Image (cartoon, rainbow over all chains, first blue to last red; front, side, top):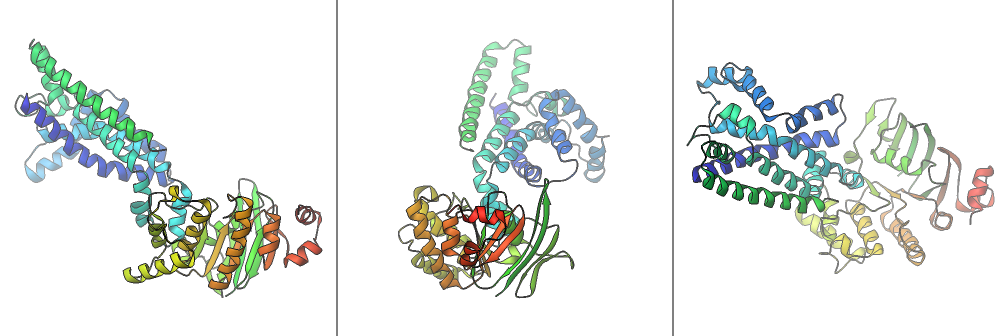
Length: 217
Length: 236
């Protein structure tokens, strides 16, 4: 049980780290730039939010499996395959939770008063400086809310993780997968403990995210 | 310094088509809402791109559609005070002012900021956030921030519109004082007749995206040309 908890936190933390970097970048371009295909791109990044996680997992197998488009290259260069490792669990969590970060951050960036951005430009600051010193600090609460939501979602990821990382005891069995195994084998008392702990933890994250989100406007 | 502009811009069925020039004076763009006054400032500052025309200061082009010149806002060094002042809510008064001191060394920045704080009577407010200070004080911070790097032109988009009357009158004196101290072309947008009359060296009257009349306030108010200008000046 402790292994599963530690693994879950490790997977969610690694996934969230990359979600923050990639999510802010994508959200910034969606919020601040106009280019053709922008809304199509938004749909593409949002898809994992509504697709059955098994479908997302299936795409990941096609891409990262040993014979997948990317997986084949990785194997050719390194002799290493990502499937059925905890990295695959982190990848699945990353893809499934990324839309929450993008959606929340995009809304927060769009809510920054355009005059403040223009003021920064007229005071001689570049777009990059303006982003770092005006836009991101003012969108901070939304960004943190997005990161907290993404972390909670990454922590609870099950379907896509099962597809790409399997449910290998002592290797890739995150808490959701461990709960599934415990329930399948009728170990109710341990399952109950994990379920209650997980519910409280996720509730706490949602509460924090809501608190932060209210402060955006 | 001589600021000369010729601007043509079409947006959602509205046509702006204006041409005027001013020297180191306080020019007031005066007219009804929707006449294209604020758009003119945005086009001059590089916050919007004209379809055609030019923006020149002493012969130097900042925008010229004929020779494909289009400098960014950052490269123009035009001070801009927004209608809502656009003070950064997450920065203290001092940091707002320091943020305007681009292109200066650290010590120089501090020195200039100190000068601005004294010059604009902002002592004691350095560590306060915009939400903690009054309208008139915010105004002065916005001016200090726009002026700290000694811009070549000062553009003011109805900066006094949120103030009540006694404070507005005080701010007119403040504006004349700024003009004397900084000696750069100043363009003030307003639709307040009394403000236009009392502060302008030159009055540029806008009507439906065109310049209806240019002259000293006395010229314009004594001899309004055309019925639209007459209606505007008679609102006194």
